[in-house]
Length: 96
Image 1 (cartoon, rainbow, N blue to C red):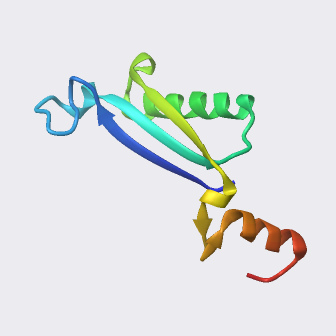
Image 2: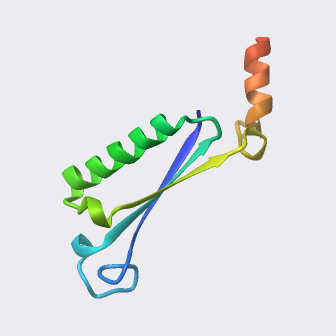
């Protein structure tokens, strides 16, 4: 499952263009994955990302925002083709 993670510090304190230190900023994480993850898998992602931000950067869990966006395989491209075509070729044993 291809994925992309984008993070940003937002909020009143420490956001982009703010004079506040980034340590006080509210983290925002955007996770983009191809569609098909279960609710349990998404919950685990949220827990793991939150734990990592707490452990690594000292962020507060209650100020951490995580958005998971599921993208249809027909709307995600890599290796010069759409993901659904890529996976179809893999299933059919066609070299890319």
